[in-house]
Image 1: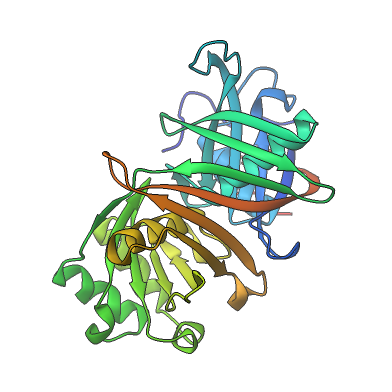
Image 2: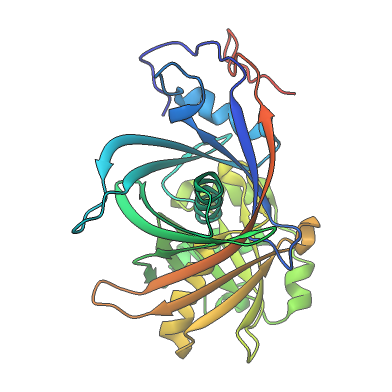
Length: 322
């Protein structure tokens, strides 16, 4: 929801860093805008939610991460690290979590801190996420623990809405599940990688189905190889992302699902090929008393700094575009 407490104000060239998250062999990845609201010449004022929603389109990215600090310190003896609050937005609104946005935020913070290794406590939707990063010569490897993951079978009513929207028959529903990490999403295996490659959902119909069911989107994947490699595509038109280049949290959900279904403890997920932006996410799952927990990893590259317009949302509320 938009913050109504004050009108959107003029900004003195708000900087947004583009971070390419979840690279594959040094290339591709999902461009993500990262804005540090605490040190971006905002005179102590945070952005409104309308302004945050404007940033992804202005930056040419699907998602944006916004960082702030409220003085809270990480728990633990002798741990004096500040907790960095991270919020995630698409053009459609706020997300309770974003995995590749978390990778981008960690890479941004690690690059700014300098040094080779970096650790951070990130507050995401009220939960503290322990993250770490290792800086290399041209990229940064970031990791954090996602979970717990909730898993259940989809109902016949859910399948009746989702499968036709994906252009599929009920017969392919074996192994499907609803997985929740931040928000629930539909996970569906297809019989072959070629079937995944040619998949062409009706995006309007899928958006309507996801809106009705309260789902983030549909994460569709090919069979897993003996080495743990799996190709996947994520369709999330309800949040303004027809197809996602990389979806870390859905990869974590798949790892948790495969752990329970066939005992697989680690996977490498390949995404973005259909969009010409190959990406890779690795996920290692384990069982805990509160449910499956998953450590996810992605490699990121720091891109360019974009100076956003002085007024992100002009009078009338229509987003300024570059």
